[in-house]
Amino acid sequence: MNPVQFRNATSYISGGDLEADVTGTTIDAGQFRKVCMVAVNNGTNSPAGDAYIQHSNDDSTWVNGATVGISGAETNLMEDEVYARYIRFFYDRSSGGADATIAVTFTLKS
Image (cartoon, rainbow, N blue to C red; front, side, top):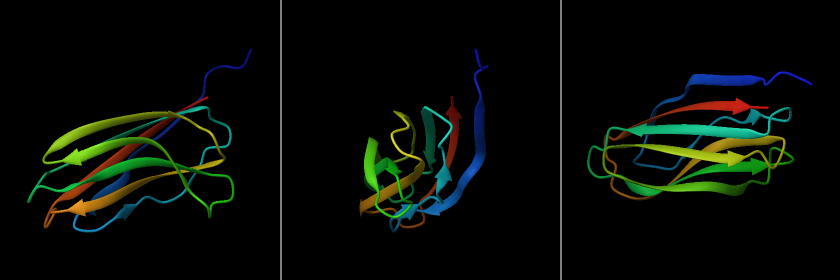
């Protein structure tokens, strides 16, 4: 039996500007089965939008997985199965967010 493997990054996104969409860099998650992302925003000027864990088999075509609505200053936890080789964080802005920033961390588990 193989031991459980973990991989994490505490500064995956640091200071993402919520006045526009925010897209994290691609993570090669081929050897993992679960992902957890924590998104913390400072809530300045009431940002509103949806955050997603996105999945892709080709690092080009992305499909939305776990989602959470973002509004105001808050911390959001998203967990998902890893359905494809690549994953990333994506924030789809709806309104507000001038001077608001977001920080995202992730943990992968085999």
